[in-house]
Image (cartoon, rainbow over all chains, first blue to last red):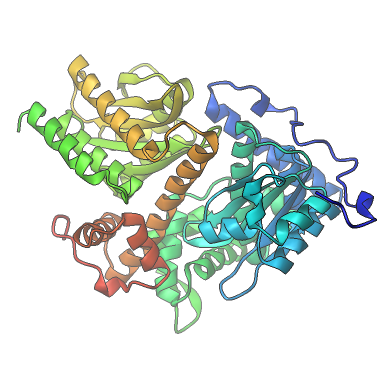
Length: 276
Length: 245
């Protein structure tokens, strides 16, 4: 790759640890006790989030945590909503920001591919022929210092919220553990985005997520029911449920169970929640 | 029907379903149904997990809220978690016995009338991707022959999930499992919509989605997606014959 821009040294991941670096943590141990491993990883996500919150870097919180937990050089989250172009939600550092902006400008790259195909996109070698398909993205991404890029869909059932992108300055696949951590992080990001859209304070996000580590089925069923009750999309229904849980100071899970049990519903005419 | 005939019929049915465009959740639901028929169990279900990830329910012989609760609690503790973590089958675990290793799961299972629980790992080439969970209301043990049949069905389930890949590539496996787990969420969203629209229980809503998929030779997940994104009117869904109340 012939480098044409003089100020390249600015665009390096300098000071950022290489991709192969792994955080000290349970994922190191390839134990067969996968479940214990999951809880420990989720716990470390929340611990890192809490640390970042204290240091005041709220905007890039989810991205910083994503990059830290997976041990890559940079991470970015692109948001997606129907009828709207993809937007950059946050990035973990300036290089990741350059790469996300590049993707949004040229309209191709790991985020767009992941969003279009609704699958994990893995491009472990941007210098390879297989990366040449992104004719505008790849040359510029290489100039920015990226060598491997990955996209993980952020989705909750039918609701496609965006993509979590990971960037590395070295060629190479993510390890199994990194890949699993990225999927875990994509689900945390999904819940984080819903919570933020429902009005959660960014500095309360780790606490917020920790209290509802996973969505249970009643949440998805309730979202379906509320979508029909209020004639709104499933995404809006999920956010409406989240907001109601906030204002009632109850867990999303409890509110959802009441909806499924038909003790709580959204009245379309009154535009309000009705207890029955 | 004798068990041999049932097994042969099940294998033929699965072979018939394992065509290019099959739906993982649909196949696993079918397998759970057939487990109940061929082995002497009251309820069966499948849980899957991402490598290093939490176990999630994907399919069961019953879609009632009570059944779902029993699987949901196993994201945290229960026979599936242990079986998945250790890759070792749990057979003939008596719920009323002295073993108290699952303080939350066991009382719930007992309250639902179950006497024993069994769990078989879904394994392929040394990798455990999930677990097949069996519940029994009767007193008495599963025979070694029952266990062979159950493990055989668990192996078929594993192949059903991983059939599209020639080698056990970690990226593909992750993508396939995360797709299967997300499919389950789409189905729950669609069940909620149908249950509100028809004012029916979740299991009836599920049966309707499944009947429509079968009748029109569509994938269950695609039908659920069309319902949720509004491209298929709930009114236009076929009614289920079997579970109509």
